[in-house]
Length: 379
Image (cartoon, rainbow, N blue to C red):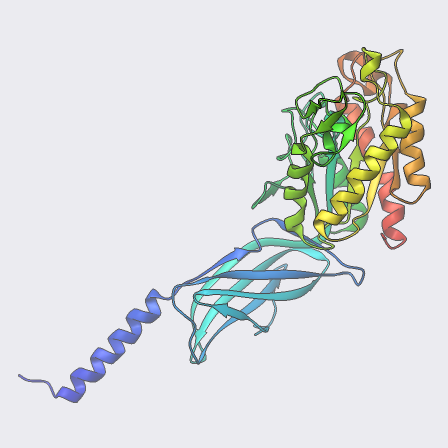
């Protein structure tokens, strides 16, 4: 029996449309699961939403987004969206909080044809942590946060902030899990860390490439001697630091937490010790040039850090340099970690790094500095 040609054409059209609809797909590249977006002064965060489609967007097609908060789904929205080929980009303003579930869908002729989602995103506080070993993963015993809202940036992805923290040296413990728990408890928002610390580094090694200084640090891996007898940084730690934090964007994190100074203070070879005024000038250069590179005046907290072992517990010269840079408004005063001694240090109090107990106390000292500042506006 021959079917009418009109009927065959209609069946073919329906089948084709069903095949196209079934083949349609949408994927989300930004944000990623467990990502924390820095909240602004108004308590909200701008969340960039970007991704790809399996087809070029044509007239009658669009992308819709909605947020699910604690099981309650918001309305589907159609924010202004940029399309380029099969890619799309838009943004949402969300209140501080989370975890939120973000859902996106492709709509064709007012009918949803494809959906995708990111399970957990948050708007809260993001901190960059830099310096040497006591800013990194060299503590005595690994830690993990109690709260699932304390996370760490691995580069393009985020994960729970259990030690060791990605992006920093060492395979041991850090103060970040404990600090994150303290901040989450006090602020009731997700907290993210971007760890950048490098063990045993002098501030001289953190200088931009080509910055000169008169005498070398104890370790020379990131510096080189010049024909005139002076020294310069190869810029590698500085470049890595900028590359790690610049993608966060302007106002993309709350502050840098800087803990460093031990490798400039009281070196076994006195010719490797850095004089206080030179420490001050070097750190000021690191702060100023990093701000220039990332395009905004990111706040910095600078800790008092020069402790080595019992009997070599502080360098007045380095401590004064660190304090002066805070007094002059270039940075904010961080904790005095030289005061953490005895069983707060590794190896029964004989080492330079912190014990498990010391890591918790170190975190508490940071929280004592950060929380009042945040409550006062965080600027």
